[in-house]
Each structure stands twice: as structure tokens, then as C-alpha cells.
Length: 93
Image (cartoon, rainbow, N blue to C red; front, side):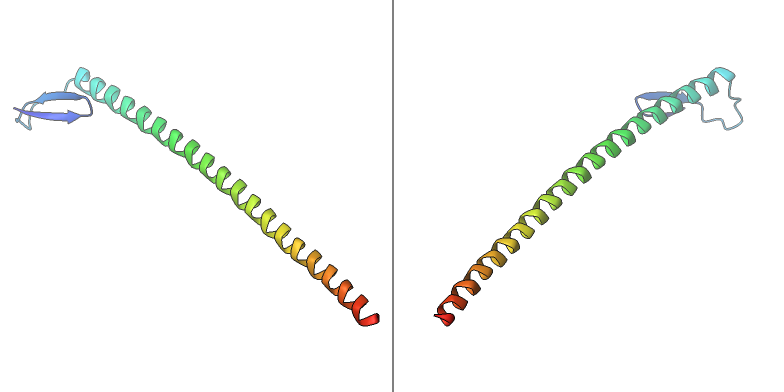
């Protein structure tokens, strides 16, 4: 005899390879596989939700950083524009 480990269940199996598998054994195995599949599907869904959340946050952070960068460049252009006007007034005077 040996044990077959399927998740949280252990099955005692005969070592005799010629032993027949009953419908009850197959049903139990299918039930266990179904539960494992559902658990894996749930984990996959949670991972996708978390990934989408992270991507959306990253997207928002990048957009905010880009807006800040554009504003900084605009402020510099405005400063340069004022400096040019002052220089033009000094040269004209």
C-alpha cells in the first residue's frame, strides 16, 4: 500500500497495479480535481485583479509625472520669455 497525496486529501492506494478502480474512486478523484481547479481559478482571478490594480496605479503615476514635467518645462519657458522681454527693453533703452 502507498499514499496518493491530492491537495488536502490522502488516498490509500493498493500497490497491485492490476487492482480495479471503482466508480466511487473515480468520482472522488474527479471531485478533488474539480476543487483544485476551482481553487487555482480563484487564485488566477485574484492575481489578475491585483495586476490590473497595479497597472492602473502605475498608469496614473506616470500620467501625473508627465503632467508635472510638462508644467516644469512650461514654467521655464515662461521665465525665459520674461527674461527675453526684459533684455529687449534694456537693449532698446
